[in-house]
Image 1: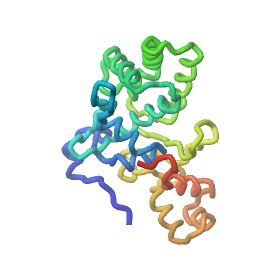
Image 2: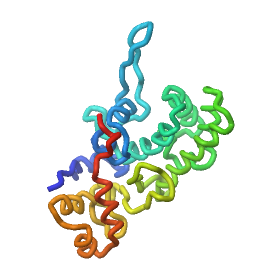
Image 3: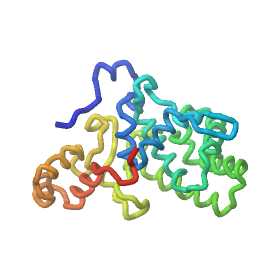
Image 4: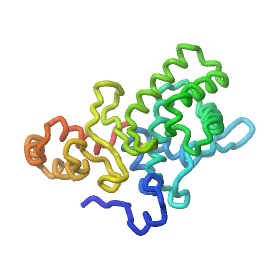
Length: 243
């Protein structure tokens, strides 16, 4: 049985479903195929040594529930976009923070990376500001922009706000990553769901790991084998996502 953190009583305290603290750090790291330690530093910060003593890396994402270390769907989407920056290894986190702060001020947004304005002038503001801070070449800035746009394409909006995420289920980004699985706070209590049949991927994976074949599951759910395989892949812990 899959244990869900979703609590209706808790939800009533939040007017916005997108802001409900509903995801643990290891859980989000698995969904986004990233190291737990990296996500933890993004949302909690971390201490690091320098020649002049210990310094503090402040969080890049403001948690929906700092006391319980829980992320909201909006936090998950923010981390998804930040992963684009992480894939370009020359991007320094302190410079990313400065660029995010700049864009937040310019857009007047509490969540600039997933604000609908970010898809228009926001990306240019972010890349331009980062280029000024780090002196990234024009070619490097083009790469950053392309990566961010690929991640933004996996976000779906409703009423101008991010409402659904199609996470990458395979290591490489691009056309080879199907949009078979989505995460939507209004469906399956916000857990990854197979898009074709709207069944939680955890339920499909449980049956597979209990011994049922992909062929049988595809027939039972009335979907393609590829869909079942993507659901199972979504529930596997990537090798590079260890704490």
